[in-house]
Image (cartoon, rainbow, N blue to C red; front, side, top):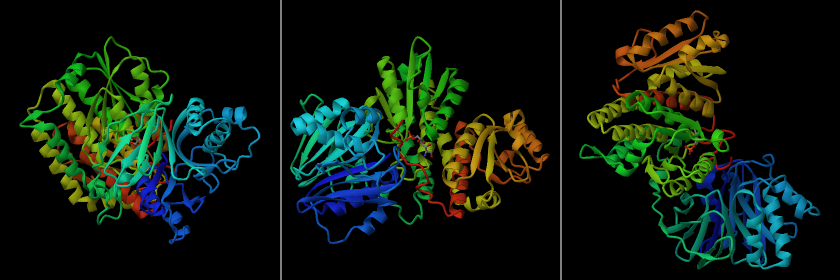
Length: 592
Ligand code: M6R
């Protein structure tokens, strides 16, 4: 959450900062701001709203070769201009941008800054004032180290110093901070995406490190002031990957990229009929007596799929955890547990904190992620990549699909059962492509639900897990309140809400569950509830809403969820919502 950027170099910092912030806007978009050097002053521009608005309030003819920028997802203090970043210290010496949360900011305020008049309600303003306070008695490096030693929480900071306007200081703890090196220019950012236009390679700072950046030099130190050297990573982010092309929204583009994502993950993990997953990883999983999978949001719903197939087919106990619920209380049961975490971004703080807890206990970890060199990838013992390429829309679509496909490969590899893998993937591709080509048929459902306030998605087993994800997607971008339920659970309470204004969409994925789900739908109809059925062709009955091409494996959850992604997208479109940047949300959730 929050995107930050800093620039020193030969180009106009204002332009670089603004275009980088546009690329980082998916991380937060309540407000935005930049601070740049103009002659001998640091000048700050900030306001609520998107980066495009910020652009419109800054004069075109301003030139600067150094500056910092920020796009905010509010944590402390409401969304207003004063709380927007950058923030400056009481004496005007330091100006900073911050991503993260300072847990002890009130304590620090009382301890060191009782005579400072604060302007904003943010924790970030405490940091910048602390630096001005510490510098009174020591050098800048000592002051930076002192700052690191007193701050508790997560912080990526980029700091501008009025008394030395040719450099920037950066500090990192528990939230990403990358330093990119180009030709006569240095950039710093929360995501390599911001480097796309000019930076060839970058380094990732580790926790509790700080760095001093000048136009031609980067010096990194640990919290005791020892010099640290990091390996450089080539910046291979591809411009095409993050372009919207002819699509009106990233979400639609990303849904329609699903077949190519499936092909890419198949090509990565299937070679000459074998699954190419590290045998030592497979053995560790096989040797474990219980597997814990921890994740959040959509990744959590994909994790439930793994539990389902592992317990049903491999007969191994899998416990799926909402990562945030177990940060403090996780106690692994079993002699030899194995931990898997799943995160599209690889930067979800709830999951990172869970992994830290597991590492303290000496547990072995696998991370499944879409983001190379992410914090989770670096923290875990093993990692498997999702190959979905950058997902920009806040609503996760293609990454969910590849999470399920990767889990399918993992389970087949653990079981050493590769017989049907190629056929299953081919069948899946045919069915998903068919959904995409016939997506107009979904409009009929959309028309009837778009004006409703509430909706249930129901199913059983895989259909139930698909319903959970379908409901999240609908809430997230169309703002229709939705719940995913096992259809059999309706009669235990939820059916009380059903009336003619409360629709239910059933996801029917197999013959055994079909009869039960249909009988639960009858109970809804008897109470005037409106019902829709999305199912595969062999189970299709007159009056159903959509018949899909059969997928005869556990991957059948995917086409049903893809339909629900279209439903969410189309509802949001009709309502005129900001589909890629839904209200109150951000793509990368880097706070606890
Ligand atoms: O990057 P992650 O997979 O760790 O993100 C987890 C959730 O924040 C994410 O899936 C969220 O629920 C999506 N916006 C759902 O579309």
